[in-house]
Image 1 (cartoon, rainbow, N blue to C red):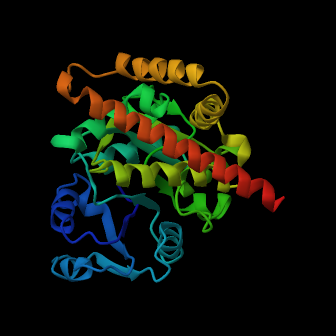
Image 2 (cartoon, rainbow, N blue to C red):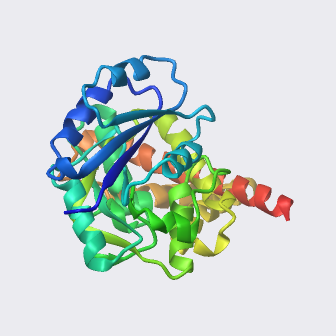
Length: 315
C-alpha cells in the first residue's frame, strides 16, 4: 500500500477511554500506513488532554477545538491534513484489528467517496445493555441499515466514515451549524452531487450506548432536532417522520378522546413488546426495554417537531 491514512478523533471529557482506545488503534493491521493520529480535543473538564499526552507515539497530534462542537473540529483537522484518506474514529467504540484495512479495500473496490461498516454492541451490563438492544432494534430505529449487518453497496449514510481526501474538495466540509447529524448531511450531499457512499458487511464498530434514560433522551432529542435543521429536507425518509407523527397523534388524542388515548398507548406498548429481544434480555427487563424505546421515539419526535418549527420560521 502506498497511500497515507490519517485517523481523526473528536474527544471531550474522555480521560477514562483514551488508553483503551489507543491500544485498540495501535493493533490495527495497517498500522504502518497510518501517518498520523489527530485527537481533536474540545475544552474538557477532566484530564483528557493529560491522558493523550501520556501516549508514546510520534504520529499523535493534538488539535484544540475551542468551539467545542464536532463539525468545527473535524473541519479544522481536514484543512490541516495532507493524507490521501481520512478515517474518523470514536473513543466510545471498539474496532476489529482489520477495521481500517477493510475500509481501505472497500474504498478501492467501489471507488467510494466515503465508506463505513455497521454497528454492533459490545458486552454490556445493566441498563446500558437494555438501551443498547433498543438502539439496534427495528422498533427503536426504524430499520436503519447500519444498525444491523447490512447488504453491502450504496447507502444513505454510514457511521463514522472513511473518506478520500479529495471528497471534501468536491463536496465541501461538514456543516458547522449542526451539533449533530453533520455526517448524515454530508453523506446526503455526496449522494446528491453524484458521489458514492458505500456500506460494507465486512467490518463493524462496537458502539457503547448511553447509560441512562436522561442521556438517551437528550441524545435523541438532538438527533431529531438536527435532522431537520440540517436544511436538507429532501433526504428525510418515512421512518424519520414516524416518531413526530406519533407524538402529535398521541397529544391530540389525549386532549380530545381519552378512551382513544388509552387504546393507542396500550397498542403502542404491545407493539414494542413484540420486538423484545428474548434471546438477549430477560423478561424482567421488558419494562426497561419498553421505556428505552418510548424515550427514543418521544425525544426524537419532539426534537423533530421543534426542528420543523424553527426551520419554517427561518423561511
